[in-house]
Length: 505
Image (cartoon, rainbow, N blue to C red; front, top):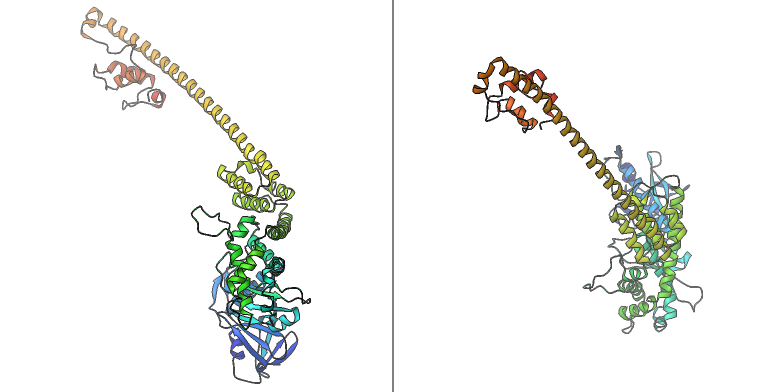
């Protein structure tokens, strides 16, 4: 790419370019403009323009390999075209591109090829499609505008003004639904512009429309659609205004009215004092703030959203969703569309939705309440809310039963332990008493006068063992220790063995 650009900017009239099978001199290229990343040239005496990079980027390591400057350029223009194609699929107007190889050569010497974006120049486009374009960022008018001043009084007629804005309100609803670039909703750089379709019938007004180009910095691709409510469309936000908010409930429509009014005034010369942007915006707002045309716009957005979700479900019909966040987003999308059959298919694409955390279920049901589609609300209440409650109740019953069983087992084990402990104690006492009796008999009657036994049946097994270890305050425990060693309860170091340890803890 560096060599291609070096040759393109070389001062030589001999350099040739070949595009789409046609060869022309580089000197026949006229620069129309440029930006931070691209320059655009028009081939003289044609309607063709091409975009080339205005600089080379440094190589980077990305996606597991070295990306050259040309790789990055190709990725950039492919992405630009793909994003504009996405917007076009929803019926919105965009600059249309092809990606074609542009060969450059210095005859008899070197030649290089670079992929470029190719499009029609705007002036030719305006003539062919009977439109006039307003480049908002450059405040540039392209094409021949109609006589808007002559329509000044007609704009005050609601029916006339609605014809002007009917398409753009539908496009605004689509942009809202699919998160397309919209300065009403987001801060943008240089992607959203306006154009007016010029009627063949002189009695009909021009029709305002959005037009998009240079979207790469403002747009990351179509999001899963969520159709706004009527109030959200009017407000220009999905955030409900708080009671202390100063935001006008019609702020979205107000912004749209000014979006259309401003270029109309820019195209109206000479200016008239009583034909100003505020008065025109007020007339357009009056036309826009009509629930009938707004609901038509929303119905159009719902139709496109329905088709989008239908295709999404078809592409993934063999794969069950396994991510709560994805399922919630899908639910919000189909709820906003309001088609019960589509909602049902989406709901069944997730394994056991009632197993989701309660807060996730609350998100879905709260969202459904906002759209007031009763069949969907009823279904969610039965198959999500009540099913969740039923499962939680069953779970709690199961846990309570398990806990009761554990407690019963614990009591049973404790009873057995106590019984075994008493048996061990009795075994010891029997041996101890026999030993004590034998010792007394060996010393005849005098023994009982000198010897005391500090072991008795009231002592616990633990107390008996501690006495045998010499930890008692009374007596040495020598006899007990001797017996316990023979029973395997104490080792040579006088420590408790595993045979008895679990019973004296």
